[in-house]
Image (tube, rainbow, N blue to C red; front, side, top):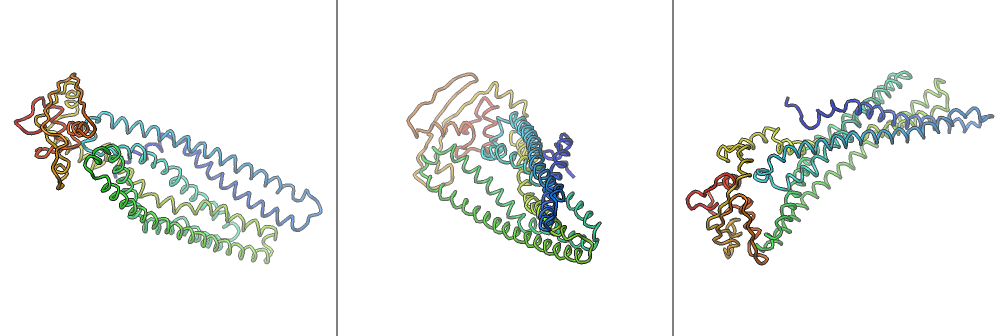
Length: 434
């Protein structure tokens, strides 16, 4: 299997911090469980009206200790976890920037601006949830699952196996069903949200072009339709989330009823003191807080996969990314990155009778009015040129033509090859627009 370059390496780098985070997570839930256990015992013991306060002094101290300890441990757990994740996040951002910076001259040839901004602002941020919302909650649930069944097995093995079946539904069956039902929908929502992000970013940066072309209403209508489609899918996910939560709570209710029935039988048989009944029942609730989030944690996996796929594609570590790099090399007629860097230091730009109309350039029918009509420029390296004109005269369009964001009608090469030729070739071949 291909090694994951964005998640797995940081487990090795921050092994100690992750181990501490896991231990603190387990201790937090254990403290919460002991708080409820001790509180149940204290309430039941106090109901017997003991003749001396010393008979309940130890559980009183226990309640105070576990109550304070839970808050303190939980605070330290969050502090360690977020400190570790923010360190990883900073390294991821620096790493992605170092991958993108050398490709700055070509990056917009291969990716839309929204894709790059989405990777920097959304995908990297999304990956922090892999640690704090998926990996470690699942590990804490597994540890507590094993501990709870072992301790309960010391009292009654058949009943421990029954409770193990209930918990197995919460930590395995329900997450598996949730992942199967929502994988494609969750992935589609993530991809379409990325598409909306890119579309909106590109539209904001090119708002002048939308206004000049007389199509702002078309853009708004199309964007609202896409937004509504994504919203409908998100509502389906939320509806399943509510149904899943109901199923989980019903399983917890079954566990509570089973615990009441078992402890009642143990008390009747003289195996347990009656003051322990409430203690055993109440401890189910904090433990369920460790098992219920596992379904949501597993459901997030498709979102992480989409984010990882885009990061790997942009950084060139995925098969598609490698294919894109190879295609870029072939389109650029064998120009290497070193040659591109060199060309950026000694570029000679020349435009010969360039014409561009938005209707024609976009394959639309219209009046065919040219935004840029017969413009010729000769700009050697180091020369400064000022282009002035009234609003709508075509200044931004001309700049986009030079950048390759727009391709003149009749140009024989895609925008990427067009841009590379612009940087690397001092002469325009024949009469072709460049």
